[in-house]
Image (cartoon, rainbow, N blue to C red; front, top):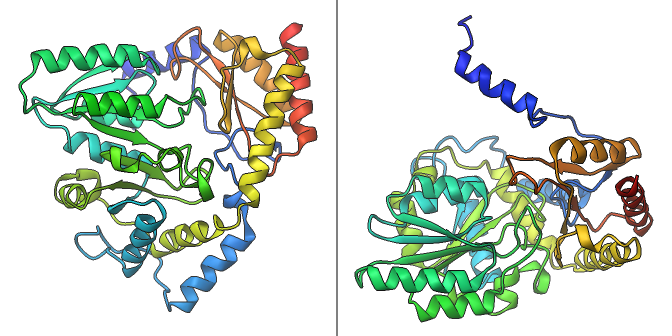
Length: 384
C-alpha cells in the first residue's frame, strides 16, 4: 500500500490536537435528542408496511433504478411522486434529486450564471456553499438574518451591476445549526424591491411547520414570491431524497444543465414509494401536534432551569446551547450520554471557534419527563 501523504497526515493531526477529529459512531439505544427524525417517521412500522403494500399493489419488484433518470432510471413512480409534491406544496413543478446535497449542488452550480450575483446568509448550509463555489457567479455573504445588511448589499449590487444582472438571495427557513428563522415576509419584500430571485432551503421546516407540514413558505403564503424551494425527505419525512420546487421552465433547465441530476443513478423505486407513503402519513396531524407540544415544553424547561442566556432563541425542533470550546462541549456531551441522553456536540470548524454548542433535536416521540430530565442535568453540569 502507498505511503499516506504527509500533508494529509498533518491535517489529521491538527484535528486531533484541536479535539475536533470526526469519527463514525454506531446507533445507540439512548434517548434520541440528536437525529433529524422529528416526527418519528423513520422508525414507523406503519410507513414501512404501507410502503411494502404499495410496491406489491403496483407489481413493483425492482431493487435498483438501473441508470440515471435521463437514461433508464426514470421509473413511473417519479411522475406520481412529483405530481404529489406539486399539489401538496402548491408549486408549478417539482424535480426529485437523490439528496438535499445533490439538489443544492445541482442548483447553485448550474443556475446562477457568470455576471450574476449570489447574496447568501453567512450561516447557510455547507451544501449550498459547495454549490456556490462551483458557480461562475459572484457571491457575497450577508450577516445572519440581518435584513438591513442584506438591503445594503442589494443596493450596492444594483448600483454597480448592469440591468441584466440577476441577483439571487439565498436563505434557509430554519437554520440547521441555530434552529432560528429569518423574517421571510420582510426578506420577500426586499427581494421584490430589488427584483431579485429568492431561493429558500426548507430542509428543516418540511413536516414541522405549516398545515400538514407544508413548510414555512406556504404557511406564510409566499410560494409565488420564491424562485426555488429546496425540500428534503431525510429529515421529518424519515426517508431519503430531495426535490426542487419552482416553475416548469426551472425544472426543464435543471434536467438539461444540473450535473448532479444528470450524471447519477436515480433513486430506487422503494425510496420513491417510501416518500409517497410518508406524505400520506402527514394527513394525520397527531405526530406534528405532539412535536410542537414537546417544543413548547422544552422552551418552558429552559426558563425553569434558568438556561435562557446560553440557548439560541428558536421555535423549531432544533435548539442549540452555546458552550465555548471543543473540549468543554465534548465533555458535557459525554456526561449527558453517560446518563442516557443522546445529545451531540457541534464542534469548530463546523461552527465558528467560540460558538461550539450542544444541539438538541426534539421529536414527537420524546417524553416530557425525558425533556425535563436532560435539561435539569445540563443545568447541573453547566454550574459545576
